[in-house]
Image (cartoon, rainbow, N blue to C red):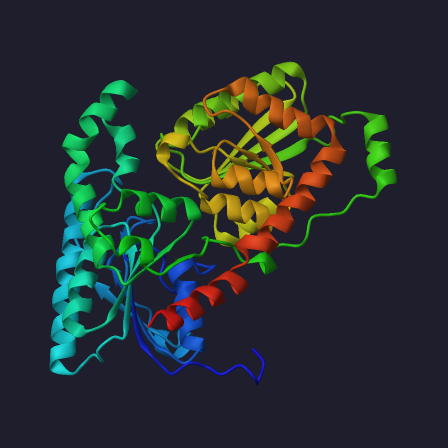
Length: 437
């Protein structure tokens, strides 16, 4: 920051999010840790309200000692009951605990003078309970309420309803209508709306109640989840001579193309398609290594498939990796696999940001915003979810054409530099929050 730039008047800012890892739970900082750091560095008094139950680790957690000194912001944990499954009544109860207890603790803290009245309350959506409590508090405390949209609830639950797709569309309003009404109320109460993608921002605007005249004029901002580009070296730039030599030599089984899939191994991911695609590549003689980093209910199936795989394609299942090993895996790969089923309603997953930062050519299943970004930056290829032959063709195209692979790796890094660089995008997010007051 230049000396000519004037820092804003210090504000008291509350961040309400129970999901993200807090300091002490592993690097790098995710969305709210990154935002809290930048806001604190700009002179604001920042408090992050989180939960005593880690959503990612499914374990109890405590606030590390000395966090205010180390990070220059505070973390306050709200007691909630545990849950093991992401889709469960226990999780719903846990979120209810979070909303009620957060509202009570915050009200008591301000009334007793132990907490300063906030100027801004930014609450992540989902879950619903956090922003609902934040909206009520903001109204009572005369604070600005910002709703930060990270996912589309309740639409994402429609795929979990039983029956064929046409039937789910008919019964979804009966089961999910209450959640949609609550979301509309939260958005109507918001003084400003931020989102992790333009897709989410457009979707919630389209779903706003027609009678809500303020919806179109509510200040809004998009800040992608992003990645820290400095974690990864830029992808190697092959010279034309090196590419020509590679093309003349043809595919080299001793140098297989290296793919990586990182993320949860659950039903919303195209894992069965990946297994079948690996078999197709192996039987076709395509030299490829497919590395899988993550855990979930489908991990045993993947490990069994890896053991039985024959031919030129190998499937390597690593389980859940620590950050250093994860970065090392991506740094040695050529291709990043975005194996997300479109019905999950995910727009731009974390993994896509990391792949682009590492300069991996993307093989992507998601239509819409991510597909457009990949195309604009010539960063990869698309495939059709649930179509193993389509996925195998995309991987084989990179394995047989190193010029294409090289060009897409450079395009992927350009994509990261343009829209996923947290050092730039979260500073813009912080400035937008300051200007919203």
